[in-house]
Length: 327
Ligand code: ADP
Image (cartoon, rainbow, N blue to C red):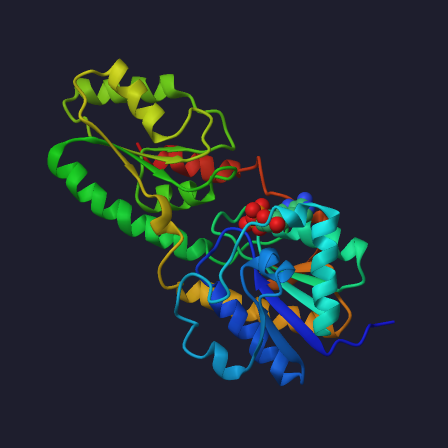
């Protein structure tokens, strides 16, 4: 039997991602549309434990769909890893009369939600928000599209100066466990090499191709590296290239946190709005302890306990494209 839900809480947790605000807006407005009381919880699970909670109305989410970051702020919360911390969180929800929780975050936040919902009688629903796109069961996560477009814009600019000076540029993008930002931005900017955690980096063959370019007196080359690449990131790659090709002019650029910020792209606003709406509707229909994703352009509901990092597989087609188009 479905538990009747009248008051819901919404929080953002873990790494921030552009588009989280659009998701908060969708949750709040959908909740109000269905006659619910909606509470914003600041700073993720930390704010929940500390009772940093306020009631929201339609106006509290006005003029945020286009803003990066998260109006609810986000945090990482050590206490929530422990049963005692989660118990405190549950007591706060009980006290406030909140009977359903929407968690916008990545696979870590969803693992927290699994423990929470298994130990306590509180329906949880997740919305996949992470710039890394590293969650199985969804083709999109909120923030990825914006992050990739930010990286592409930056790399395009770097390419201009790289070509003007005949340099080798090594650009590090975010992606500790997954190379999606590197793959997408690398292909879209015509990078000659894309180094990702999902496959072993063969630096020796990259050196051979650079030496060939050196012989042709055209030592211009763009290498995009995911921060979690097994060779060790842009600085390590740069060191290796300089050791092997001393004449090369090598420059490193680590894009860093600019990839997390900025106005969300149209795509991110759209998927955040769809997911936010579906999360609330799903809670009310009694489909909870799942997270909302989009697979083959259809909403997909994945049990929270199956929220695992999308690791290890990059399609052969993509790898072929990189190789053929970069020659
Ligand atoms: P993300 O959601 O972006 O993957 P994290 O992995 O940092 O980010 O997780 C965010 C928060 O979720 C953590 O700080 C912690 O409070 C909670 N969390 C993550 N994993 C667990 C877990 N196994 N048990 C309880 N809480 C967890």
